[in-house]
Image 1: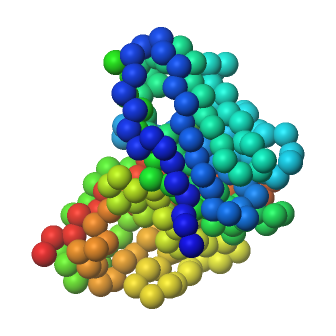
Image 2: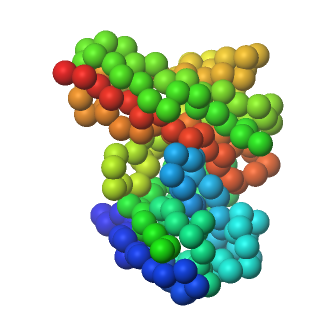
Image 3: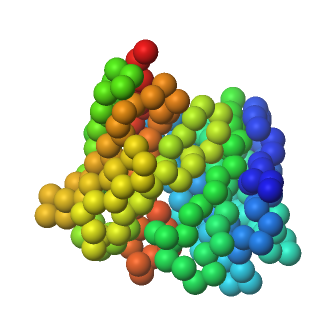
Amino acid sequence: GAGVSQSPSNKVTEKGKDVELRCDPISGHTALYWYRQSLGQGLEFLIYFQGNSAPDKSGLPSDRFSAERTGGSVSTLTIQRTQQEDSAVYLCASSLLAGAHVGTDTQYFGPGTRLTVL
Amino acid sequence: DQQVKQNSPSLSVQEGRISILNCDYTNSMFDYFLWYKKYPAEGPTFLISISSIKDKNEDGRFTVFLNKSAKHLSLHIVPSQPGDSAVYFCAASAKSNYQLIWGAGTKLIIKP
């Protein structure tokens, strides 16, 4: 079946502009994660959606970042007034979870969106 | 504060030999450890995991060893193949928290 898809694959924007990144998770997966990977760094957790529960936004670095997940499927990560330090690869992952321990619930990643802020 | 550390940014190994990738952690609450593999322009893919109640887990050419007293785990790949060239991430989770904490990754290069 289809895996996790993300769009666009690359985005170049000017400082101060808003950007929207999209994630289409695997059908039936209830959990959805957004991560950010800066150059030479590990994945940094941003936000987590699980079913109809309120999302965990504890990883969002500032109030310029927001995300939503419509109908329990597609998710959009929005960065307002982008800054150069926002340049990174943004990765989305989905998993079945459904009460399973995160350590045993395999996350399936999309290819990421490479964001460059000039 | 890096809770999961991969101190080797890169590792070069001859094809057919053993590759050993290392990972250290600081949080004693971690109860699951995972290894993911990432090719360029692709997302990470799950490779192998180990529960903190075990000290070894094996899957084909891949074996993960966990030393809880040293807060250290390692991934062994034997024999190494050219397709194993990738970046390997170590990640950890605590039962009380659904977040994965990731290391910075080690780039493995398999030389022919």
